[in-house]
Length: 420
Image 1: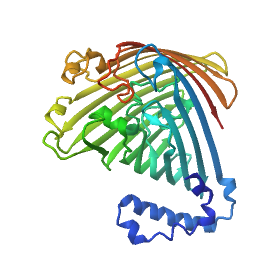
Image 2: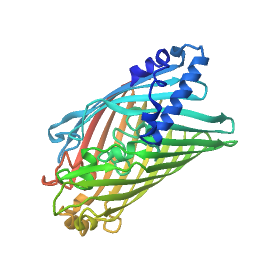
Image 3: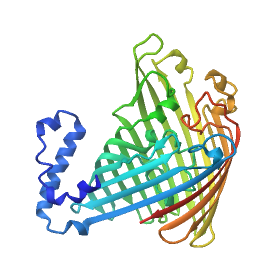
Image 4: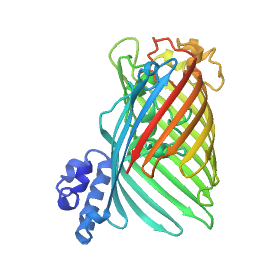
């Protein structure tokens, strides 16, 4: 994808060579891409500015070490694991004053959840209908990062995370593809006031799915496939005051996952409907930052099997964090987070046995403490310790349901990250 962007100006006729009838017959997304391609050709033909002056390239490389006293977290961590690596290369090309193209190739290794194969993390055209002192309005088409909560759209860049790992109560790594991006269309915009601003973002499209999604929602070995609906909606509204001193956000992820069963008498085709609703707040001072996010997540199973319909319910999750900056290079944080599979059964005494798992598999409560050293502008080192009660956040591919888990477990993580 990056190399294609490099060649964009020298191959301005490539878009126009695509047969219109062939593209239009697929879906509205392809029609929108065809329209963008035509705009790119016309705009580049009229702009004699060198494309190298309008190109930005950035990247990052992160390596982590993880050790747990029980259970597996990003690999065989009870023996110490280096199976946490993130590498990304991203680029942005300003095609015209209103039109840009952005893309990122990401390689992520995370135990059994991710094997490190490079893939397109995001890749989209962005067109601003309006931009000025009063605000902006525009749209994007392609694979677009889902903006929800305070951190999701930059979660893979270690320097932007509120710790070594994202707060798992809100940003579950085991179902990250439901949250991460959408293949479709997005509208974005905002309004600026004297000392504050309001921005919004709405994405409509298909979520990429993988074995982690299937393992979490219905079980990895269940015969059949789990795919995403093409009209999932992610929306967010962010209010900022005094250049980000106060940030308040409302976010929602509305999704449908469709199960295609293999022929047989036990399971049938069906779907899973869910919502992830998040309220976020943050206060930033010179030396301190205080952050809290709260989520409700109703989920409903339809038609797959009567057994799964007993899993209907509403999950609840939250975290609160205080971060202190000792200097420009040193900071530390303390966080408490909790997540529950059923807000009405926080001990798991009913939900656990009903799903054939121990009660502690339905909740996790954690204390997290960490420290970060910014060695230079490009290099950072951070360390984090988790004291966990419950195993709801554990990956089911790293910890299969048939493998016993310990409800009381600790994580020590060390991370080094370089970016340019």
